[in-house]
Amino acid sequence: MAVPDEIIHQSTRLKIMSSLNVLDRNAWIEFTRLKAILATTDGNLGAHLESLAKAGYIAVDKRFEGKRPQTRVRATQAGRKAFAGHVAYLREILDLSQT
Image (cartoon, rainbow, N blue to C red; front, side, top):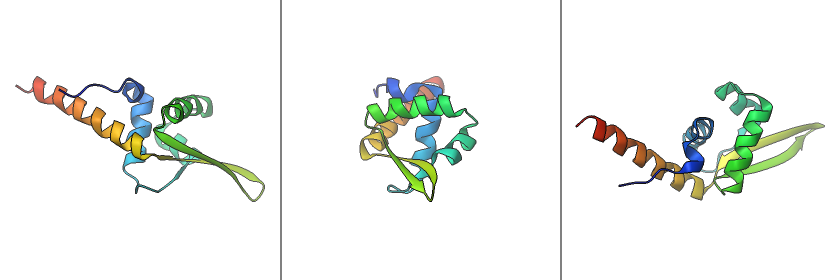
């Protein structure tokens, strides 16, 4: 049986990883776009991104577009693997509940 990933299991982090995993492997998403998708605050999103980055599940790129700071994120290979494992765990739970 698959095991849960406690880092991804938290609902906001699960939504973040779901959003990142639908993108191409090397595609980045801007912080502001991800914040809008998740309907969360800057602080809340930032804290969850920090947790995912510490785990090695996402890469964070901070740069400037002209004079404006821009933060963007993408899932790492380790993050995609962890997400796939967590999804397998959730599917097993759903399959068990249907029997």
